[in-house]
Length: 108
Image (cartoon, rainbow, N blue to C red; front, side, top):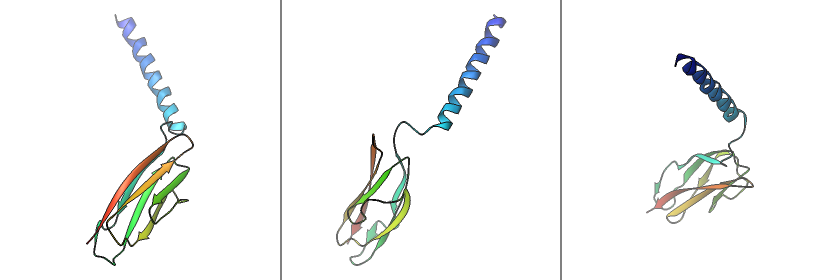
């Protein structure tokens, strides 16, 4: 029984090392990830502005609508001055996948 346990342990240990290296060296096959997307103030009085902040990983394209536009960097911020309650949509994309996040700013 002891003869079987040690080789099995070594095989499992070596397999976990190889699997760990594989995960660390290549890009994620699952597509882009939104690490954060938020507004500095989520409730405004008409005429006030707030700043949207975002950070994404693994994206080749980042867009925020309405108002901010496309061609955004993976990490950034933009001032917005909505005239009514608005839900901002961040879309981070690659050629094969995309992910979307939402932030609402209420205007009173």
